[in-house]
Every structure is written in structure tokens, then in C-alpha cells.
Amino acid sequence: MPYEVHAYSIDTLRKLLADKANADPAVIATKTHCFYFESYFGKLGAKTIVVENDYVDRDFLEDFAAYYVRCHHQYDRRCARLHFFNQQFAAADLENLLKGGAGGLTADLMKSTYLGFVVVKPLPETVVGRTCLRTYPEDHGRRCFPITRSYDASLFGIDLKVESLAFQEQDSVVAACATSALWSAFHGTGMLFQHAILSPVEITKAASVNFAGRSRNLPNRGLTAEQMALAVRSVGLEPFVISASDEFVLKSSLYGYLRGRVPTLLLGALFDTGGGTPAFRGQHAVAATGFGVGAAVMGAGGPNGFLSNSCFIDRIYAHDDQVGPFARMVFDGTTVTLPDNAGNPQQHLSLSTSWRDSAGGNVAVRFVPQMLLVPLYHKIRIPFGLVQSSVVNFDDFIELLRSHAIVPLKDRLKWDIHLTTVSHLKRDIFNGTGLPPDLRHEVLAKNLPRFIWRATARCDTAPVVDLLFDATDIEQGRYFVHSVKYDAPFASVLKAVLGMPAAAPILANLPPSARTILDQFK
Amino acid sequence: MPKKPVVDEQSPPPEVAAFVLKATQWLSSAQGQTALTETVRKTVETADRLRDAQRVDPKAMQEPITV
Image 1 (cartoon, helix red, strand yellow):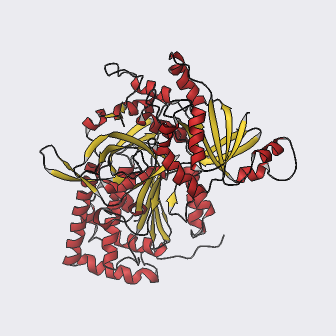
Image 2 (cartoon, one colour):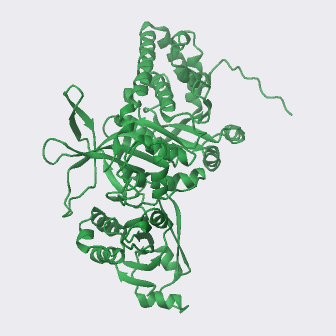
């Protein structure tokens, strides 16, 4: 039978994963992914699973051709694909639809209730192949998944679509966690920057070029950050690495790049803290795919009280190949105490994970973030940190004036700093309101670079100013290109202040990037 | 085209005049000068601190990621 239809339950899903992979049900039952799917599909309201029994998955086929085909054991090269719907229907309904019968189940109903798919790989344990599932609802901005894209799934002539970012677990043969994280990230950057999307085995091979001195590449036991950077270069992108041990730097950098729709890789160390002293479990990599924001500033805010949207991030959503897609990693304020080089205890920022034990119980595995690896198009040269530093400096000055009631601002400015493109920026301005006609025309008609860092300051919810930075420039250049002044009284007061002889000699000591911004207000 | 009215660009609009007056007085005072100097000093420190916080330990680039 080319397809089967089942009512959704987690037990049915476990059974299908085991049956279609020809795997041991006892092994599948204890996989963290199954516990994760139970919760995830429960929240999405899954009602029906349609099994596409004979499915050729391009990624698995590449892995099969590179490795599994030469095993003595005959692994199957075909996969199965499970499609999920939040509408109840039976096999007879689907059969009737495929026969062209009227009434009951319709293609439109299937499209509107589609939750996505999971490819089942015919392997003994690591069965979760390419998985594209609908995200949780955004909940009025509480959750943000800026890097999803549309995936098509043709099911017997019915064109299904799901907004997602592909996930798969490592097979521990041609791919380890770093490979899986890169693979997910490339699914985002491939569409954004137009490059080939490599299969897991192609990523592992690309990462292993020039690393001949290391242990064997296949079976693969893991990559280093250096090797991940090499894999990024192999698709024509530039790997940009940022330390992630500082909470403000981590959150703000993640926000800046993710809002620019660039998937970002988060690397760190896992510690089991269940037994008192943290036990090192190994280095781990995940693909950050979104974030959640709370009502208040979480943890350490910005320097000198700097306030930005990223300060409100209370969780990251990540494709963690050991857990599942869009897995929660929460900034819950818990630190992990580790000895430094001299043996002195040091508190380290850590995030909760969704790791489980084999019985599905929560385990106290903490993720200590160490670095972000951002795969960037080569023309995005000005790093986020440099732009944020300029904005922080500008904000320091504005806040000094505001705190002495010299500028007409009721509250402290709240910043939103992220990467964008000229077309997105202009579309936003074109569709927006609040800019005087002449100013609106000036921005829309202005010649601007393709990639732009946009820093929008708001007072309460009203926009005050947009600072635009040329992301394609050089660091010692004048990469601040334009300001959009929404708040005319604010801009007038600032202009007057900057023209005062008493201020000029002191402001001359500001870092050049901050001075350049102020110069635009003169 | 009709001539545009001549506007004295040196005189601020009325809604900002009070703020400008206050700014002039404050920036000319010793207290204002000290506060501005201190803010500029802190700003330079902050820029350095943020730059340092983004630096990656080169050794970390070579650790195998195996979990």
C-alpha cells in the first residue's frame, strides 16, 4: 500500500517510527525525540498521520551513496515520510479524495490543517530524518521565528506547504551534532543568499578538507568550530565568530542576526548538574532558530542601563539534534560554577535544555554558551557588535540629556537593532505612517546599500529615530549613512545642543563612530 | 513658484525653545560640564568592554564538538 492513514497518538507515532525504520521499538521508545514530539504535537493539536511509504529523500540518498551502500548489511535506500494534520480523517476519506469523489475530505482542508512532515530514515536508532514542522503560534509577539521558509510537500498530487526550517538528528555516522546544526542553518542561508544546500555527508566532507591530520572523517565523531567555519566557507559564505559567554552580547547578537533572517549557530558545553558538582558531558552545537520575549528585562540588561528589545529575550528556540526542532533553551538565571585555570570557582551563564533521560524524565543538563558562529554573505562586513557599540555610545549621551530633562523624551529610549536589506527597509517605510511627507520621500528616494544595520529608537511605542549603517562598508569608513528623524522636537533640541560651544570640545573625545552619528544631527 | 517665507534657522521652534534654554544653562554650568565629561569617559570604557566581551578564545575553536 503506498500510503496509510492513522489517528494520531504518541504511541502510534512511536510504533510508526520503529516499523518504518525497521528499528527496535524499545530503542525508539526511549528516544528524547519521542518525548519531545509528544509535547510538540500535543500543542499543535495533531489528529491524523498520513504515511507516505515509499519516499526518496535527497539528503538520505546522498548519505546512503557515500557510506551505507558499502556496508555488508543491506540498508534500505528508501525512507518513509509521515505527514501530520490537525484534522481528523480516515484512509477511506483520503482514498475518496484521490479517486476524485465529492464531499468529505478536500485538498483545501488538508492544506489548511497541515502541520508538516517527518522523514523516517531506515536506520537502527537515528531514525529522525528531514523534519519540517509548523512552529508554535507567535502569541502576539511572545515568540519570534524570523528564519522560517516555505517547504513544499507534494502528497499524491496535493500541494502541501509548511513554514518551517528543516531539522534532522545526527546519524553519528556521516554527521554529528555540528553537522546537523550546519545543515539546518544552510537551509535558511541557502534561500537567503542563494547557495547550494549540502547534505549532511557533503557538510562533513567539506569540513574535513585540510584536516588530514585528525582522526578519520567517516564515521564522524564530531567537528571543531574551525571545521564548521570551513564548511561555511565551502558554500561561499563567511563564518563570523563571536564570544557568547556574556549574556548581553549573546542575546543582542542573536537578535540582530536572527531578525535579519540569518540562522546562527550556538556552540557551548553541556553539564549535568543533577549530582551537585557539574559533570562535563561534552561540547555541543545547535542552530538558533528563534527567540521568546518576556514582559520584563531578563538577566543582565545592557551597559549603563542601555535598553533594547534583545534585553527582553527570555528563551532561545533552537534545532537541537538530540532533542527536536524549535527546542526551548531558557535564560532562567541559573549559573554553572566551574573552576578557572587557577582552580578558582567562576560563575558561568547557562541555559536550560529539553534533554531527557531514557524514561522521559527531566534531567538537569545545562548549556553553557561559548560562541556564536554566523554564516554571512561576504558583503555583510560590518559586524553587529560595532554597530551596537556606536548606538550604546549615542544612547549614553541622549540618556544624560534626558535625565536632566533637556530633551523632550518621557522615557528612556528602547532600541531595536537588526540586520535588514534596502528593499525591506524601504518597504517598511513605504507601508508605515508617522513620517512627514518630505522626510518619507527623502528616505525612499535615497540611494542606500543592499545590506543595512537598522537601529530604531522608540520612546514608549513611538519611533524617535532610525539610525542606518552601511553593513557593506569597512570598519574605519563612515559606515553610518543616514538617520530618519521621526521626532522633530527631539531632533531640533539635539541639533541646538550639539551646536553649543560648551559641548563641542568634550564631545570631540567620543569614539569616532558615535561622533559620526551626532554629526548627522548638527 | 511663490517665494518660500524666510525663516531664521538660528531660532528654534517654540516647542523646543524651553529645552534649548535649559540645555544652554546646564551645559554652561560646572555640573553640566562634569557630567558630560564623565559620560564621554564612560562611553569610551563601554566601547572597550563590549569589544572585549565579543572576543573568542582561539583555543575554543579547536575543541571537538562531539555530543
